[in-house]
Image (tube, rainbow, N blue to C red; front, top):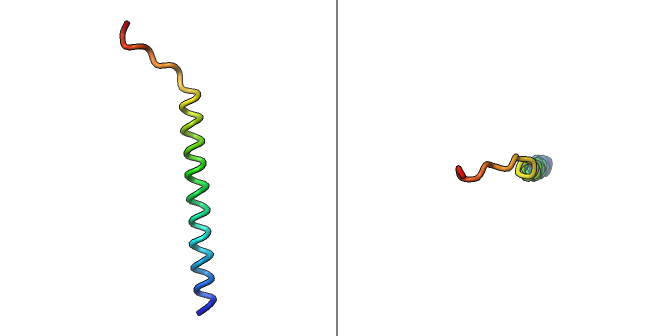
Length: 45
């Protein structure tokens, strides 16, 4: 019983760490994209 609880806890911890890393990478990629996007043309003037 204790082994099952430990395995479930490790699986949850691993999933949480993977999710945090994914969200961090995504935020960094969005920031990089915003910083390197060309300046959009002004409204037709």
